[in-house]
Length: 315
Image 1 (tube, rainbow, N blue to C red):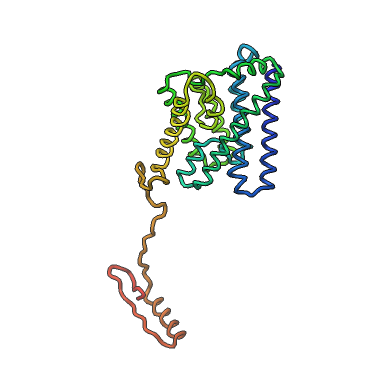
Image 2: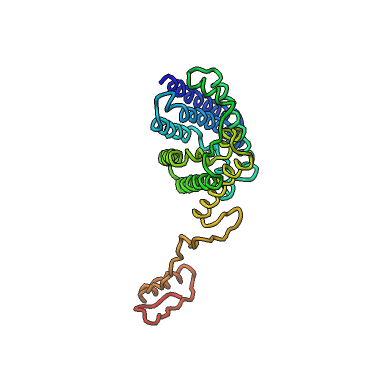
């Protein structure tokens, strides 16, 4: 259990360091730069470092640490709870940024800066975690440090099935994210954390269940077993396809590309009220007319009998 305790301390340290970076950046740099650059950079570093350490526990824990998938899945759920509450709106996922761009919630420049910051943050997280492993604080970290130089690909299935798996994970993730995007954080974060845990349980053995191009690039692109083209097809094009289908299914269109709704009829929420003629008794009409004459020094008004109505109308 010593390895698990050290890993837990690593998780806490990474989250604390990244939170300090976010708070300092928020205080001293312009808000736009913080949202597009600093926040995404720190959050991506946090996500990548925690993912790599957790992946080490998944691979070595059953025979080197004495704990199984129940422990690692629980840790995954708790970590994504922490990520959800600490990221402050950052996604640390290029597909989420691209989704926001396609539904007209982000500009091209902001989207580009966020994506570049995410890739940089992921790479920084990978370097930081490898440095931590090199300290070899436990037997698990000693073994992982030796294995880090010759890792194997996360794609443990055929190329076509890997694309379907990553695309399917991306589809469900983005569909749920769109459904709960305007919900309270207290409700949205646990739902997303639970979904991530379920997807990792069902698809983790096939492709790693990344559905995040920046994270997959930092974690597995340098490993042997597949070439760059195959990695791009599975971990970039697969999630992109899943995200596009999710947006199209949720909204019926992709606003940045076309406005016409292909799936749903757009009806106005507001109905125009129908105006009905109101009958006014003749005595009331005459009284109103006399008061108008007194104020204006004379004036014309007429009383018109509406056909089928019990009284006259003003005209």
